[in-house]
Image (tube, rainbow, N blue to C red; front, side, top):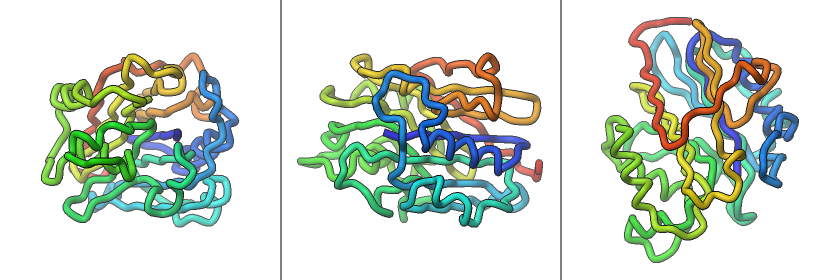
Length: 239
């Protein structure tokens, strides 16, 4: 299981990186899951507010080791999404399994928090090789230009039962970002998979945990379940 955080607007990159490290260490954990430390790699996708190009960085080390010497410390951007990972299956570790996931066929970047062990069946596969990659291919088939909430929720309702914990995801494309907030009814740890947000006139933050260093707990609110929140990218520089 993993932790994710996204910031859009005007913000200090160092603050969002520090929040991701806080979550990776388990320092802001306040939920119903035994997993609090997320040490199996981390990754980032960001947008250049001047050119609109997307950048990506992945590191198999824990975030608290990788962030200090990453190329992100001097980054200026109007959009940043970070994923810190704890592998559900011990053998699924390494760069191939580090998010954001990408695909040669298009320019989507995909981050997933949860476990979707049955989604491979909807792709015609006999067995699962990596559930997050299969979920990516199922939810966003190659050639998809944007995510529609009703279409996505219909896809999620069609996932066969059997061990799924959450389909929470951040999907980033050159046109914008979509946050999928969805877990099946049988999820054993619903608090763990509840996404939270705080919004000011300058910034919109969505996070797996309420990080006090970013905003005091009363300023955070839980996202409504079963939603797809879309944040379009502005066509001009805002940083």
